[in-house]
Length: 326
Image (cartoon, rainbow, N blue to C red):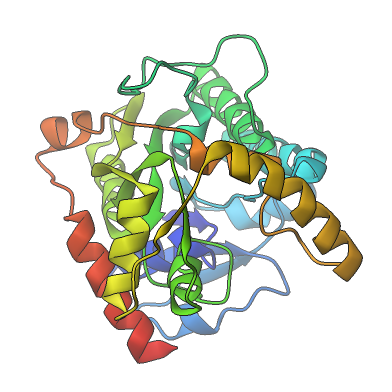
């Protein structure tokens, strides 16, 4: 049996239907208070296994009879104040998962990491690949540090007998919770008439391609598989323009330069603090959206024969879904 963590999250909401479509019994690790309504609507809903990655004792029964674990659960935050919680949820949680997988006799672990776990401090124009590993110094964001810590636990599991595969998606684009904090929120912001865009570039991939890649490496069953998943490198100006046009809005026209966002994020901290809200822009967000990241995702299609969906078509389809569902 396959056990999926993070089934109610952004990636999980696309992975779950793909697993259900296989027609075989599968399981989802959920907390007692998790909303299971979307999973129950699937034609082949999962067997629910209750447990919490931060409570190792709760995992014992959840892993019974499991052959493959897909670990897609993660906390995402770009607030420095969340560093300890990120390391606890992503790092310690993955350590607990690996320990239980080894104890329960799980054969294979597929871990969804992130390009944030790679060394992205490169010269402009450098295509980041899986060879760009972090040196001993601490990564620049707390999220990156936590994903790197989680990945170390996965490789420890391999050293202790697990067959493992690790995937590194770039920015995942897909429909989902329009009111949340994942990429579907970009369409909500475009609909509000946001006129500003940052100067940086990044890599983008359809979340459905990531879900397909997870099932592909489960099927390939090769110990040590590692793939960077990236369909195309685009500027944020291009992407935000495509998003705006996908919902019949004018594209943003004001470029926010690095020095401007460097002045803006401290003011946003003050505003959010006065209103007791989470800040919309933090120092880590500023650094991420102004950086010029480019990734080489060619290994995956070359080795598997599976291509990527066109990012522009993906954005258009998500825009159509937004207009239908908002």
